[in-house]
Image (cartoon, rainbow, N blue to C red):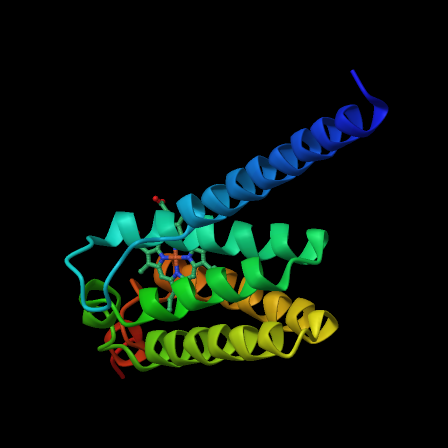
Length: 155
Ligand code: HEC
């Protein structure tokens, strides 16, 4: 085989390998994305599991410095906030506060990822995580408590 021909064959197989790898990476990223229309019929537990997955992907994106991944996961979080089941809990003012804060931080995360501001995105992610915990604390520990007027001893 002439060296020149050998070189062309080698180069084209490297090119094929790179193309396949890129395709694989792209389809993996696409698979991870949540396929969901806003106002969809997801129930509460599906929403919460999806929230956890999206938050995990934000963290993966932050450590890998992959702004596209952060942006995609942030968009999923924004979409989750708009589902009917998420909104249906919003009668309680404190829950509403955490919910609005969660959406605001998710939107901010998307914007910062678009601007490639990963330090800012990391900060927004920390805020999001603390909102997850605060809202859960409220839902679990505070909300079931009766209003103060109901437990105050009668004089
Ligand atoms: C605005 C309020 C709110 C925020 C913010 C919030 N959640 Fe939730 N989460 C809930 C409610 C309400 C439930 C259902 C609780 C129940 O059914 O007892 C829940 C349940 C869950 C569950 C299921 C828990 C279980 O016991 O099965 C997971 C997981 C979860 N949330 C993850 C997250 C993550 C991760 C975040 C942040 C990225 C987050 N949540 C932010 C309100 C919130």
